Image (tube, rainbow over all chains, first blue to last red):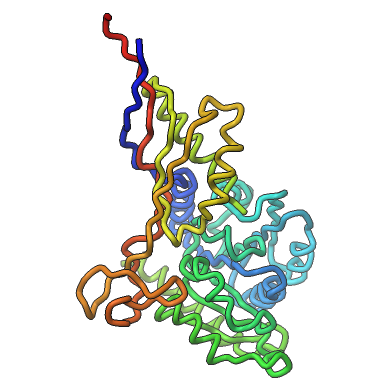
Amino acid sequence: MGSQPRLIEVRKNVLKQNDLTARALREQFRAAGVFVVSLVSSPGSGKTMFLEKTLTLLRQNYRVAALVGDLATENDAIRLARSQAPVKQITTGTLCHLEAVMVENALQEWDLNQLDFLFIENVGNLVCPSSYDLGENLRLVLISVTEGEDKPLKYPTIFYSADVAVVTKIDLAKAVEFDWLAAYGNVQAVRPGMLVFKLSAKSGEGMDEYLDFLKKRLHESRAAEVI
Amino acid sequence: MHELSIAMSIIELAQEESVQRGVQVSAVHLKLGALSGVVREALLGSFEMACEDTPLKGARLVIEELPVLIFCRTCDAQRPISSVQLFCCAECGTPSGEIVQGKELEVVALEIEEWDRSPV
């Protein structure tokens, strides 16, 4: 008996399981008529503040809820609870990103039919979340003015996995000499045609434009269902 | 650093195939796109580590890296990009976000050891 190496063709996506779960989630979201928005950014970009404001403002007319991923603490969930919206923490332990199955598990006790918007805040990280589809309708990538203009060039992959970019903390732009045109140009260089919002969750500047966009997308997705 | 969980998914996938087919896997061939979000070196290290204590122990990971290709409307053809920092056709400079290749994270083949059972 002798052994001989042989090559057999497989052709399987490594993240097949995550993609299947994400697909099932997307179908679940569609059936329930809930519009799902996920947020990715580096730590300290103002994601939680931004989400707290988003929840507070949308809650006036819409049913909203949020899932927040964090490595260890529940601080974000506590902060977000101030918006009065239902919030659930997903503690990932040492895992640097959310996976579709974590979202699926976290949603088990919630009735999605009772929601208009669901927000998913990913772990603060501009690298790993890019590989994992969470079944969301829209992925926002946040960059704050304090991080500088070149984030898109340093992390092009995350800009590729996202749909829309949001420049946050615009109220600090002058103090840190943030160059908006350079930042916008960098986003367009790595993702031609990408929509970019600039806003400040703190001062409220630019929030209306962004919230109107979300509402429009919710209504469009529901209108598409009726047809 | 999510390469370890990616490596574990690769091993799981290879193991499923090896059990189904009743073969021993000696190498896994992987296609890795430049936009997959996975770093080659980190993946190689993670794979070796994650193979320990599995039937795949000692198996090699053979990575084929795929550059980004976009569809350029000006050239009306698939083209490479200037760089991952600049999604423009490398030939004519037209910006394009229509990715044709570069997101792959795919096990394409397994190298297996087959025992020749034919009579000597």
